[in-house]
Length: 172
Image (cartoon, rainbow, N blue to C red):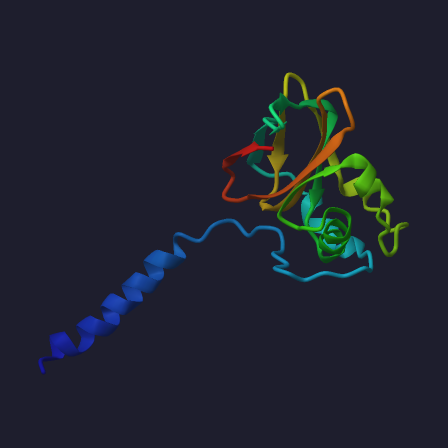
């Protein structure tokens, strides 16, 4: 085998690795996978306090039994942490997406209900069934909106991910 061929393969592999590392994105908030904890830890929320170039462009388009539902106030954005995963699994029965009567959500009990994560929660006004968040760091979030069609309110929850400074379109 010629010396050129002997060195070509490692050089090609090295060039491939270097080009892939150049594609690396800005580090994002921790990804907790399925990790859950009933214990509140402020350190788990620290990433969410940063600002960043990501945004969420949201709208509510929830319908049931032929009725269109509308926002009844603000939309809440909560950072995903082991604590909020555990809390949302208990309250909504899911950490991905849910639509439940508000009375059902309020009737459920969570461990450590005094874990005060409110200072890490962001709120946006929902007008004409549209809402937006700007200046977000990369990471995972829970969106929560209360909607109504004149009867009992429904709480919509959905997990979203911001990454790479992009605008994320979301429909609840």
